[in-house]
Amino acid sequence: MDKPETLKILAILRIAYPNFYRTMDADEYNDTVLLWCDLFKDDSFALVSAAVKTLIVTDEKGYPPHIGAVKTTMAKLTEPPTLTEMEAWNLVRTKLSAYATHEDFLELPEVIRRAVGSASQLCQWAQMDRESLPVIMSNFMRSYKTVVTEQRERGRIPKDVQALMASKTLNMLPDGDN
Image (tube, rainbow, N blue to C red; front, side, top):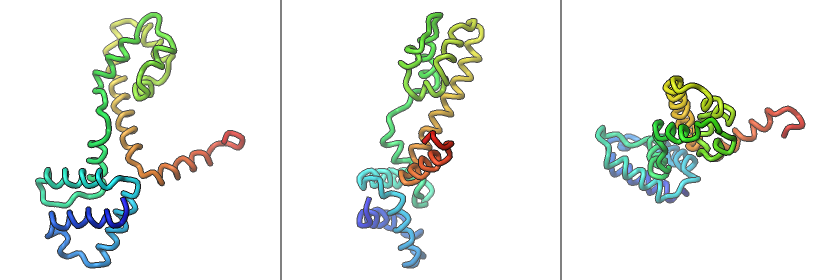
């Protein structure tokens, strides 16, 4: 989103929440514009606008949405639905057999593979007695929920910050590994 589009979004917010913006001076407003420009530079005007409008029509408190709320709403509007913990567990359970293989593990969606941990973990679960399944299921579901949350949060980090994180990660590798 560019500066003219950012100004349109902020104009919508000023109209929807006149009391909030009434006391804002020109310098504060310019700083707000710069911040919104920076944090929404990789996002489309249509998506930001849809998120802002959604937040305005669902607002019950009378406060304008903050950047984090807009980003969260944008994610809700665009992220594909994720499996529930039980749906994910049911997929894992279909792979639990005495003949569980590395290929069975690779057939699972990536987010579920991360929650399981490894193909060998899947094989170990397959070999455990059935009385252990409720404990395994509970631990898996907790891990799956954590992985889904981390994936969502990571996806919401601005691209320039992600690039910085990736470069810092590369710089932390021992010499010869990067």
